[in-house]
Image (tube, rainbow over all chains, first blue to last red; front, side, top):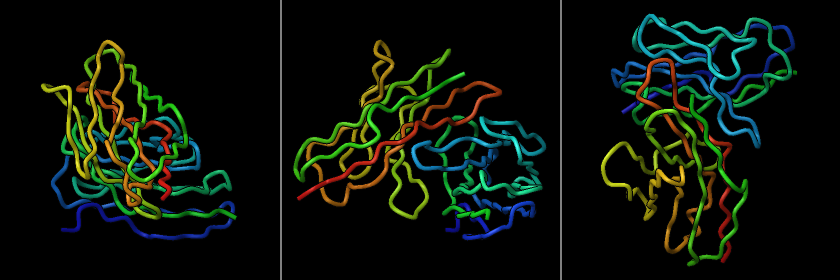
Length: 112
Length: 114
């Protein structure tokens, strides 16, 4: 019962470096999401993919790109990391846009 | 578009006391409403959800919430708090509408003292 799997769990980057956060779900869900969680800010939507082949911006998309590689996988890329991107990142999936979300365990990213 | 407001970033109760966490929403169409719980260093898990039908919904661990359309509220309650309820709680809203996605409130941290 893997559910939603995120890799890596922890990462430290230097300012200007790039990296890709990986997310995969095994529930045959159509929709996938990337959120960031910061103290006092709740979860803010970065990007989402309503279905395979589509992606849309959320509340805080600047500095990020996404790829819906196939139905299972949805990756988040930081092209040039900045200290403001230090956060905990969560991937989630839903059967369709308005149903219960299942979350990964999160990636704790620090940019120094 | 939709939005969620959670009143009170931190709520403290004594063990055995009533828990009340407040959530108000705004949306242009009938909403789907959720409460999620997050324990330290973990992901989020669903407590309960409202889609259609009965406005009082029951969830896991003795929690329940009531959808009140006239007040645009979806407050979370539990009659008697337990130490294990200490966590962060998030209210969320989504719409059956293209171009929208699940949006979260800023969260309420619940502390339970003995």
